Image (cartoon, rainbow, N blue to C red; front, top):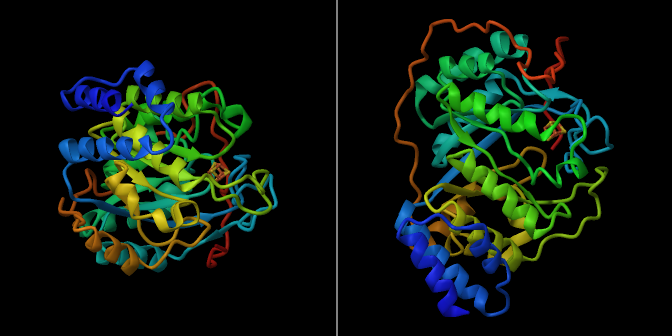
Length: 367
Ligand code: SF4
């Protein structure tokens, strides 16, 4: 098996795209051969993206009260999760979070809202000045995770100085109906296309451990390759009580590392970001994510669960003899002094409901 992994890896190192058949061969690897898989994934990482690693931070500016029924999510109003009620951070809290993200070395900082997609009021009256300030300050790359985007709302974000959006596929198209029923997979794909069209960098990945098969995992990663994503977040399900996925078993650490490695073989030159579930699923093997092929990880807290202290991740990277690369892109001047949106509704056959037009009280989110 060793020589077979080496031969597949050599072809990737020479610039060949991994075929689905070769990916299936990698899936069949187990036991001690997994260490060879990690070894070659690490070689591919260093060859294509270098030794430095990146951190990314997020803040849940609006949590809960979501109309959608994603079965893993604590924020859905369909379930009884701990963050089902809606709450918003104040502007100062969002801006402080961005400042802190830069201080702890985050390459990117994402403002995250619950909900299917942003409303005009949210974009024009609330988020615009915040996004423009974070982009201008240039302490970290200004990103946003606001749900489904139309061509118009994607352009609006770009005009405000946002340079990357996150919108996960979550799983394969085949497994998707077992996870989400209130909006289609195609809407997620369309959002990524709309964002790319607007000039935004794309961050899209999924959650592993939601009852999917390996063929679903491969399908999703190959779809991400077709969509030419720039960053793939790799989340491991941290089943939250009150959600339909409560009680789902955690993935084994070696299974998590195998997922990272195979993703590196398929997406050799992309940023692979280990995100939610790192602490609870990988446990003592967290530092192995880089040896397994990842080059990026989240720092600080997640949306509705706690991460660990940033200093612990700094120490982990230093102990490995690696360095993290902070954002060096400088400030981004918004395209317009006062960007506006021509319309918000989705151009496809699924309209994004205009939700949350009412004012909600400013309150600290439940986490
Ligand atoms: S759309 Fe987002 S916030 Fe809403 S339930 Fe799905 S994952 Fe949670």
